[in-house]
Length: 238
Image (spheres, rainbow, N blue to C red):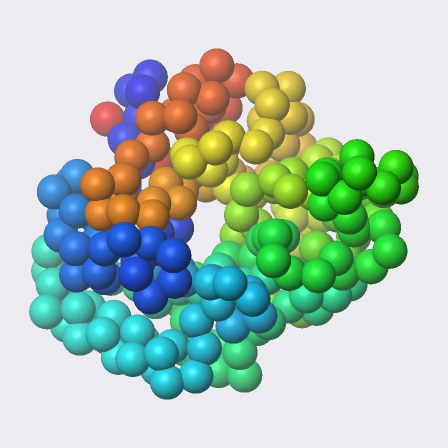
């Protein structure tokens, strides 16, 4: 890992959405990996298939609060949400946004396109309609600003975006761009561009099982190839 150690994993899922393990199992896995912080960041309520909402979300938040107290001094347990872009400049951000330690925002499937330009790659190829990466980035960034997002997850996954423009805007807003270790969505050149523009990067496992919590292998390889470790905010020199 080129002399760097990743000390937190802020993007993990559990059986509350479409993962396989419990919040407790994710916390224990993070401790086993030697992490200092871990967040459970389930999909926001707007996701048709996997969104966590209502009493279920309340139960999850209560469980995370209990785990935070139980494991205090061993690891910091954070409450997160991975919100969905619902429309141009809009997300499924809850009214109690301030109760969350980490807000991640991403474009996901099973959520309707947020404007006539925001078509999935599948839809573009099937329908032959031109996709507008710059306009797509504008819509996501406006939503990120509105919900005060901390991180944009897997930029470019499912929807083409203008990475340099997104990086410049994220730098100005203090939003991090994720190097997703389940599937790296930015090319080596794009990672170099993000770093050159001064935007912070963050590596997340996007774990859907406890075994993958703290698994940063794919993202670490991409960051090493691009030579941009100094831009990764959740990595320390060993």
